Picture (tube, rainbow, N blue to C red):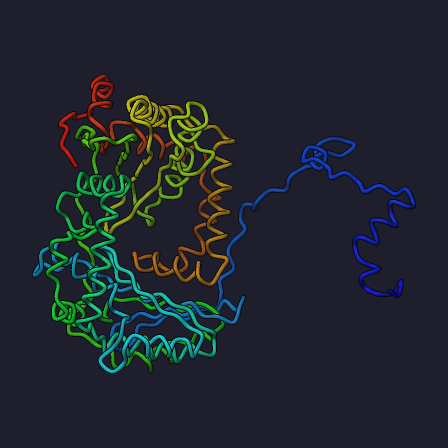
Length: 488
């Protein structure tokens, strides 16, 4: 073999030559060595300087003749366009919340399984031809069509979406097959401790309000017919009050015109139905215990009132929540996970509904540690409410919040989903682009005020789910816990 051949000059040959000349490969440096210089530790740069603003992209925002609002944003990072169609999908007064929840769930699963002239395979072939996809999903607040396509295929994708909106098929065999799948999914989901705890929490804070019905009743779902789905589609899948967001490699004004042409035939006699405001979340009732026989873990879910994203104190509340339990470096995680080992995962967050917001604290723990973990979670609530967070805690939470927001807006898909959520909740697109700067401007005193106002233990109620034979003896030692032993 020639010395010039690729094989002879490969890595093995190089190592052999190095060995013959006595050269040694340098040992990898440790993280501590990398982090220091001869004159001391390296200085880490700041994540984001105060006053830095998100650059406003080219955007068009228009309401079409059929009442559909279209927001098109140019973000030409990749030759793709992300599509989000958000349709408010609350229960109307003419249909019971339970029936609506079952019909809505099945509609979301079957809305893209074919039209009056195209079966499922033919619809999928049309999407494949343009390199696009479409999905549909529903919850108590909205029906969401999501998709993406190569930029040149946007007019065709909008045409397919328009056809699905105006000519949805809901064929009997598709509905029957999807109903069977959903019933199996519901049976599995309801058997999971986390899902049953979520159902119990929603019922505890909202009662029989439609916001609580995140999973439909299987018995009601069984009776949903294709005709009922077609009727719900005609009545509720309507453009007036809905929002279409397009983000990607596009010209905003041209994209709006494409939407106008493709969706001109989509009309409706009604305005899309917003979910009504759920009942207020308060701490004026004890934590409710629910018996789950044989459970080796308990689920703890606490909830208290919060404010919406449009409230002046929301940025401060967001940072206070991060300090309490909103990310891995939070007090709650440090206490019941890192220090005491009561749980593997713990957290808190802010949830939103029309006209209502709530703080939610969630963790699972061993049955034996249930009361102790609940006591520590309440202790951290009280400590945050009574003692102002330290400057470094606030700075860390701020850096995390600003960084997480920047990451979520850095992709076409992330920007499209965030715009659909925020604008769908009544805020302007600019609110989203300016929120990072609001987080940077929050003062330490404002965070302390939000902590005191919203994290007092007296503000929180909720549920504990576990095995009564193991848990209730401990829970009786804590105040404001109702040991009714209602079985899930």
